[in-house]
Image (cartoon, rainbow, N blue to C red; front, side, top):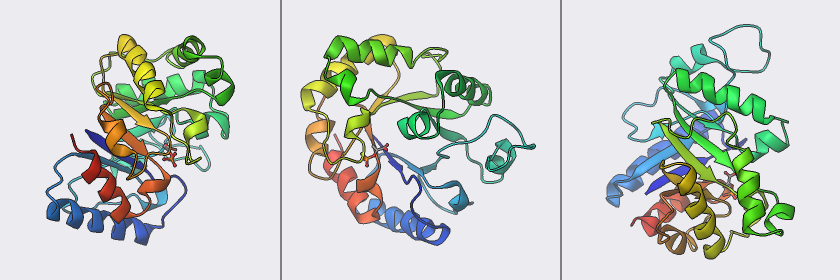
Length: 233
Ligand code: PEP
């Protein structure tokens, strides 16, 4: 199982450091050997000594460096040995207007740099309400320009209506969608959308779920540790 935590615009430099060392202590104490990814805000990226997890960036621009106000590029990531990135998160698609063209060129750029990529896809509620076929058609369009055979690719299926709402997708919906996605790519597929310490066990028990991407419920290190503990399978 993979356990990924997306801090979004939460946590400071100090609280990120405290979180990571707290999680380190908890995972060692509880014997939680698993694949853990943490995505802090870019202001909190750093060289964290002895941290056993993968630290990734929530976003970056397709450049080594240059005149791209407000963005970070490879030069800033290299300083902290960051080789993992989230691409295609629905908040960047919807709130920051990243089109499929932007998302796919970002994918191509970071693929060329051999980054581990967690690539997010997910449908809005009006598509989910139309049924499974409409969902798959919508998700397929989010793979345009994406190399689904890239060896360092992990897919995250995150229905938009389940993100941050406290209303996770049903087990059946997750199962059906992941099964369909497995036909598109043989890479690991995470589920994301209101995962918490209570529902993780049922979600982790779904065969086609290879891990989870967690927002709100992962912001507290003890809580995230509880999710890992309950979700190990
Ligand atoms: C996310 O935004 O990636 C996410 C899954 O958020 P939450 O767990 O809060 O639904």
